[in-house]
Amino acid sequence: MSDTSGAEAALAADRAESLQRREDLRRQFARTVEASRDTNADDEHDPEGATIAYERSQLSALIDQVGRRLVALDAALDRVREGTYVVCEVCGGPIAPERLEARPFARTCIACAVSHPG
Image (cartoon, rainbow, N blue to C red):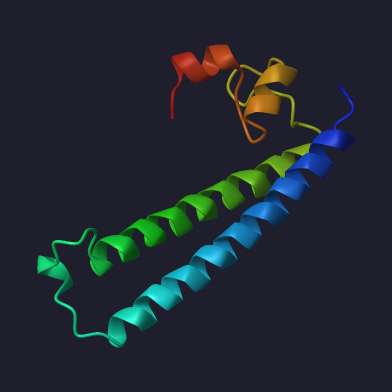
């Protein structure tokens, strides 16, 4: 098995950035909700663009997306600590370093990702 100390550091940095991103999005969501309380705008019929409900929905989806990334990063960090980070969970073969560089929380090799999506 290859040295994964660099991977662990990169995953930890990605996790810290993702936590910060989620916190920023949560603050933005709270500001959007607060701003909608302070106005009597009819956002459903506003011809000026996106509705407040749409903005809240977008922010909520982004927060959920970051949450899923954090779960994936935590699982990848667990695999690093268990010594299985570079091992495909489907076939048991190696996961190419290039794949892990592009997708650091990948759980499968490319061949298994193609033949077993999801």
